Image (cartoon, rainbow, N blue to C red):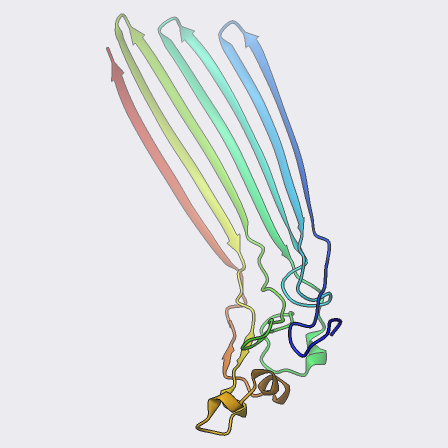
Length: 231
């Protein structure tokens, strides 16, 4: 404690932070009178420095989110009445939650499913514990083609769109212990107990652990087509 009193007597001020880096580039080229192309590249990265309730534990230390995006197009004019446009795109996103380096073996606590300080929450007090691991990666591939035909006052448009989604994910629920006054009460009179005393004695009222500590992979495809007539 660094403030007077028996409760609400600890104060800690920490500095957070947010860094955002972004870069974009595009090149357009007229290859010949009938062909036009462009290439675009984008990079986006954010780094968040999180503030934590305690200097050495609780929550996470930050998160790094990185995105790569690119696209390429080629437009070919066959004639004054026939034009085709094909585009290819790619997107990759990486999310990485930064968890503190906690020596969980020194806690001598069994059944911890991840390398993190478990969440311990006595009723009426600020809880303590590290955030669960979180680092999904997503990739998307896209190919589209559009064809336009002009016949006098008639305009016909056709197109297809194919997308491929790859998601590699790992999301855990942090091991948690809850403490209330029941374990240290005199029995029928629950107001005599103390949740912090239950914590010191290791008498938890609820225990939660996620045994799904493996990464899972999701794959999906999307295909669409259209036709349009204008007069």
